[in-house]
Image 1 (spheres, rainbow, N blue to C red):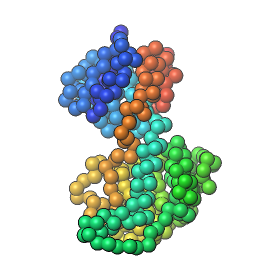
Image 2: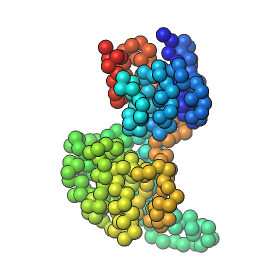
Image 3: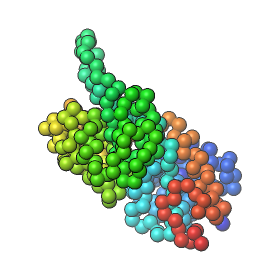
Length: 320
């Protein structure tokens, strides 16, 4: 049986262009919009898409679906998709987001340290305003979640002469970390933070891991930065802490509800910087993810899925 592969993504054609020469016997359908995907999915056995681009009607319209290659680190929305058969293999795309995630973390840190919004306002008002500048050097960055992205972030933090502290459920040492605390000592670590950076995935064990108690342990001058998942932070507790100036501010790329509703008070807070879940994005994303996609697709077509990278769920039929 010849595989037919649907790619649903805003850059679907770019993925297809790079995949076709590597798999000349495979039919690829590139869809940038959901309706285009629905029109070309019925006889496809493979779906490639981002976690938040997948939708229930598409899954139900793919009776031959056997394999989903997520084009993102996160797969929780795909895994929970209603109508997804239990025998569909799911793999993720991981291990390459370190540069873009680290740069976003530094965008937030430097913006708060140097008071970038005030600088922009001075420029708008044509106001010359020489004021003392806060440095990152000597400050403490506490990273909740010590994985590959955290390691990339720590490498860059050391160039800025920052102290790096990790909080992990499993690791006790990591390169360029000055200390790593167990997760049940999160409040102790948070109390040291000038910047508390959230980098753990959304799981039952991490739901509202950053709660009112953790926020209450932070210094009034500290900033929370969440570039992981909105569910990890108790958003109501965060809004309360920001309103009361219990912490200095928050840099937020992810939220409990996305897109962030217009009525959210976070939009209007002068101590909050908001980006639209762009942390994992880059201008060379296709090139970054392509080695994983090619390797996993080759294994699937060869009938050797056990050799795939970043398996989230293995199909029993393919396992045998």
